[in-house]
Image (cartoon, rainbow over all chains, first blue to last red; front, side, top):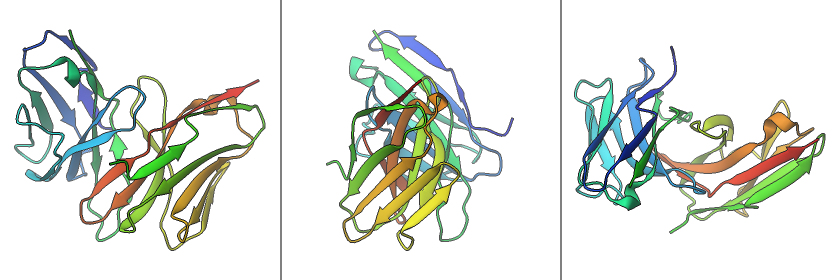
Length: 116
Length: 112
């Protein structure tokens, strides 16, 4: 499998619970991104890693959200004390570093979170 | 602050027709403009992209037209097919932040 894998595909949780999502990027890609997409909207940037270093975090990423990429391979996104407003599709994407030019991401199929 | 404005929100085109989706941006630091196609339950997939030093790029039935002075770009889908029915997002990349700013999407329906 050469694509970006995300697990689980769907998650239903009660408000206040913690959830964790996993992303496995394309193996030779050393950049990994997390985006959030709500219904009827485009994806919004949350954070990105180059290898294991988290280089940028959006203001959307409140202190209830934490992302890690401990060995520069897979990444996890944890949401603590979930709220109904966290319901969204969480997308992971990866890209190689190709010098100064950017050539776009490959997205996974996402994890759809529903907070009830 | 929405930095990439996309229109229309939805579009219905007959099979064989031309689908046109427009985007406008504000940030002149954007250096790469991709279009993504998204089917229900799937992540966005890169369709075609252009850099600001080029005014047009064509790949098969898909063409991007880019107007740097007007800060606008558009996607044209020639000979639209029912299989093209999906949501299309324009996006813009800033080199320093290495992130994409997406438009709000256009839901395209191609009818028989």
